[in-house]
Image (cartoon, rainbow, N blue to C red; front, side, top):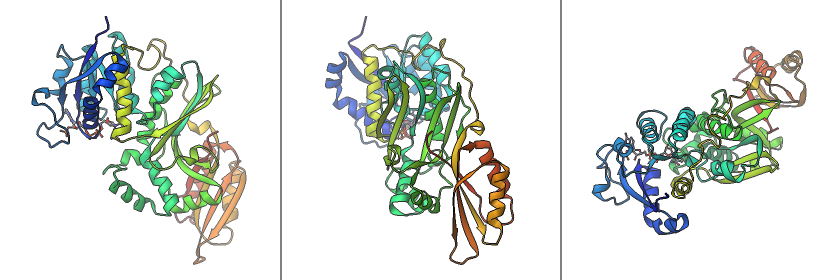
Length: 430
Ligand SMILES: NC(=O)c1ccc[n+]([C@@H]2O[C@H](COP(=O)([O-])OP(=O)(O)OC[C@H]3O[C@@H](n4cnc5c(N)ncnc54)[C@H](OP(=O)(O)O)[C@@H]3O)[C@@H](O)[C@H]2O)c1
């Protein structure tokens, strides 16, 4: 029989946990009415009980040990807001599901790494494992895929899944500032963590893409993924992109082409007129191509306590309503191991940039290497440096195999006329 009250243990009271605690205290009545069940936080835990927090918590709610939440009989739901794929968060979520507790988590690293194992335990024990907040914060993409878009066969999911890198790229463009200046500014405003490595090197987007890809294609999580971050993008690339009618965005893309799945995260040149080019600042956007629905877009705040709490409350409400579903939309027995392909075999039009000594014959040497690799040039721009000693050559190619583009970069980067590591930025979303 459905209970009219569910007891929650909230583990982790940092940025997100403390905001969620306050939200649930203030909105218990309305949530109870909407879900016909009361969400009651009966226990909390964090690493340091004596830390000063901006919320008031009754002393008797503190657990002696956070893992007690997984064995106490009166706990129905555990909300994990510790973070990280290993350590305390991993122990908590595995133990909780094994002990038949529902779990809500915002932890993309944990789900991307252990989601398959965790979902099997949840299914066996008929409890929820919910992770809406793990992918793009306030953008309700997981629930949309599992419910609103359930009718669809999905061929592609892509978008902007990291607010920090999008803030940096769009502000380098808007304010004509360097990567480091904008990163400094983002840290000051709280849009970038003090250690933003996984935001900048593409790993954060990769974790989210793996989760989305397995949900969209009814497959197990696959770790075959091409990942590049935005660390090497500089103001010259941003200016060149503008001159050519593009914006640079860090995209995550998972797609099925000729029955093969490609998963990739990399900076991409996007036509200025396209929808995705207009997503600026800390916003996230997810685009799904499905049949029969066509193209579907959801955008919103991708991080921060407010947006993340919106997603967490959606998950908690699903449990309050007694809505036990397969964590990855279909049973683990039905999930497939698909044929994943390396992007070397995929074709792209691309932007290649070479910084060279401005000497006679250099340009023809470079274009010769393109023709030897059977990559045809659509557009070439040469910008001599003011000193006339150096020159910047930008080449836009026609569609070519990725492995040929990479081979060209590798061959040219060794040449004596090259002054800086060459760049390759893929173009478009098709
Ligand atoms: N921040 C965002 O915008 C955002 C957006 C989407 C998803 N998320 C995810 O939400 C989760 C939480 O993020 P956050 O920004 O709130 O992190 P945070 O501010 O670093 O908070 C982490 C919390 O975990 C507690 N903790 C650490 N080790 C513990 C242990 N062994 N036992 C019990 N508690 C422990 C910490 O305790 P103390 O307070 O005592 O140090 C702290 O309260 C992460 O998975 C993150 O990826 C965050």
